[in-house]
Picture 1 (cartoon, rainbow, N blue to C red):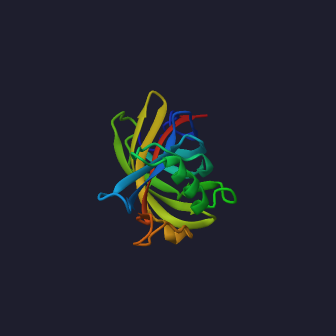
Picture 2: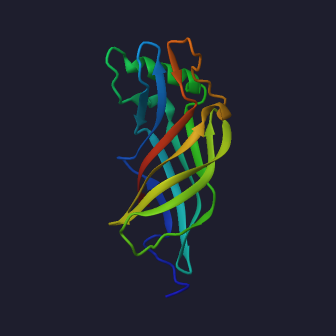
Picture 3: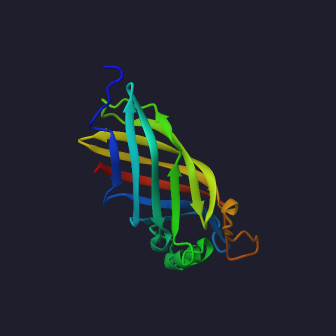
Length: 193
């Protein structure tokens, strides 16, 4: 009925084991003719969202996802190269030891989701993304699914890392050049508390 809340959705949802975040970056090594895609992931994150329903509409009231970037590790392989070296460089570029967390705080929004559907639904979620204590608006495109009292959300956003004070190697004559437009990826599993 219109106006009734959906008790199965209202409340606090927290991230669970199985949640993963990371990045994809295009890099070009001086010795290689073709570009390569660097991919790093971590499962070290914590987060929550507060959800309410009203008149059949799902409202995301507030939330916070914090990722420990010190634990990002490369999962791609590049013959002849040790990707662990990249992980050390990424930590330095992100200032991970003085700014260990990347934080996303979504803006309050009415989500165009059908709470009775178990199908994958698409949403865009805007909020403040904080890297190195610099916050900028960012919008994630997400595939969301509510099934068996579990909320899954997977998607990405593109960021210009220079906007956050992160400098990546870009010299034409250097060992490696990295495209400063990086894709941030999330795959979250949430359960209601």
